[in-house]
Amino acid sequence: MKLNSESLLRVITSIGVFGACASGLSLQAYGQGAPADPSPIVADSSKQMRQISAASGALVAEAQELMRGKHYDAALEKLDGALKLTDLTPYEVSIIYQMRGSIAYEQGRNARAITDFEKAIESGGLTPEEASTLRLNIGQLLIVEGKYEQGATILEAYMTQGHAITTERIELIISGWIQAQDYERALPWAERWLNEANPKQRKHFDLLYFIYSNLKMVDKQEAIIVQMVDMYPEDKTLWENWAALGANLGRERDAFEVTKLMYIGGMLDTEDDVMKIVQYYSFYEMPFQAAKILEREMNAGHVPRTSDRLVMLSDLHRQARDYKKAIPVLENAARLGAGPKVYAQLGEALYHDGQCGKSEAAFRKAIDLGYNRAKAWSLIATCLYESSQQEERVQCDWSDQKKANSARQHLRGRAYAAFGNVPQDTADGKFAVKWQAFIQAEERAETDRCKFLTKVVVEECFKQINASYRAKIITGGELQNVDEKCRAYIAKFDEKYKGLKAE
Image (cartoon, rainbow, N blue to C red; front, side):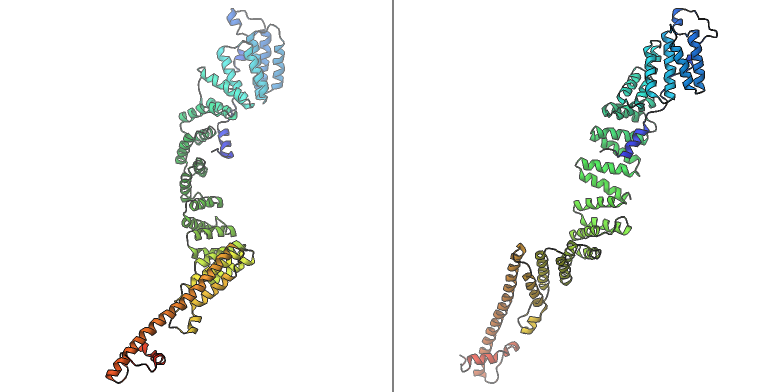
């Protein structure tokens, strides 16, 4: 996981190249060898090698004074004149080129400064320590000039030769290797920078996270991001990087848990943020929680009540089997000028809620807008049939008119007609034909059942009436022991068996 451009900029600038590139260069030595009079100084050979002649010393002193007044071009003329002198010692050449390099640096001509400093070293007039210090300056200037690898290599060599390893120099080396995109060379210095920092600052952690990221050192990446979150819990970017790291590693559940903590902590307040946590809950089959969050953030104004977002909310309610909550959301989406799919979803939600009349109206609107006619009419018919099953069953002792006008029979008839509206040349049409056959068979079964039950009752009553007639022969008088319901069948018994005697 790479840091974003803003974080990267913060890393680079925080460890960036520092301005004191010539800080190791002391100009005090330039005038020390200049004699008070123009006569040459005679000394032993070792001292003579570190002194300046009267001729060159005068020019160097004048140049030094001009430099103090920032008259750099005039100072350069003096130094160029000094270089034209004959019999200059290596030491004199080194002093002149150091001064030229210092002027070039002050003028912002870093490439010229590097060249002059290199000539100063090549002159052979510097001690090893002086040459090493000047190389440090060159390394810093190389980094400024974009020659990162060269500059960082020189700086590394300087510090591995026993010189002081300062924080500023470590930062320069890190900057050079990062700019050269050699993260392996930058890593040990960055780790040292963090370990030795007191106090440790955000830039130390940002830098290491950036390097670990580029080197694909996932375990260390994760370890340092956890430290950073612990130190800077209010920084949303850190939490986002932590979650993204988990997602990139295929540990979606970890990413989800981090995102949940962000939401609980109040960090997710934009539409994209909210949709991220909603999608996580939906992905992990928690539609109820996802719908609750989405609805809450809509009410808070973080997510707009657009048709698309309302449809998503209704989908979550429907996934949670909470159709009553899905219905008003879909009705709202429909009012915003939604297409056929929204009306179909509204019809389906109403269907599951048992509101077949409203469901049919919604599906009809969906059909008018181009929705699948076969699917719509299939659901309309199914809703009507299922509703019919909730109504009171037709009783056999009802009159034919009461049976025909019953709610169950009415809804079943509407379902039969609705199935007839399903185009038969579709897959749904084939099922619709079977449903119609089933409804007809169900009606026949009810009729046959009533006929059978009536036949059973009549037969039982005829037995009872017949037994009563037999008793009458012996006891005389009226028929006795005939139930009230069976007395209605005496006339039919007499009609069928008139003239027959009881046995």
